[in-house]
Image (cartoon, rainbow, N blue to C red; front, side, top):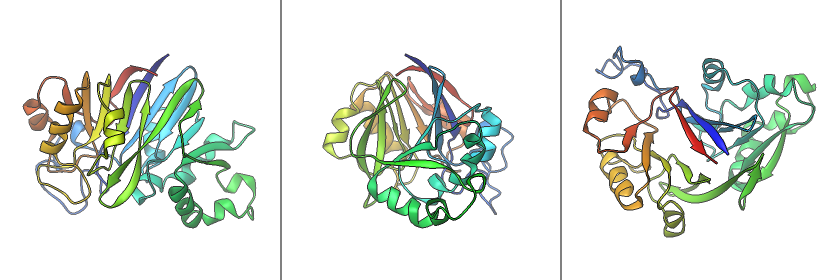
Length: 256
């Protein structure tokens, strides 16, 4: 089944421009250097699935013109990936059932803590997101596409990457354990964390991500979760064939 993958955001947790910074990337006139927090929208067969709801989710959904929302999958519970959960409420208005939300058991526990009011049933339905939570421990079929969670490491924190068809979304990763690494070989599309030039304790840096891409050998790779140390045009020009920096609003056709 054909799908369109839209990068809603490709920035790191602070976004780009970064507050208080006047570096060349943060003051760039290139729109590809303006990066909201990282999220991906998949549209296929009349269904719409979002991976992570960032603090920028309302802006992202308006900009991308997401017409409806049918499911949300979470990679982990850091603020730059979950804090837009409340902004799904308008998508509840046109559907009779709660919106399915999928996350690891640990991430679900954090969602219950951070968004306690959503789970307490003490508010009118229009005042809170109506969600149906599903703890992800295995692959799940959503509207004809299979999403396989793969456990990777974000520093010492286990987080989820997702494989869907011969495509994968691997954000916020510093190490890929062997079982997940094997499931990422030979993909059509690999979307991968590449934070900056210098090594980082909880994210893959550019040279490391390029090394992974060379070993995993996808047909095409796009880097995301990008900090202001990587100006788009300059970095893109230095990448090998088939490897690119993603940017906000980029759309790719894929098969799921």
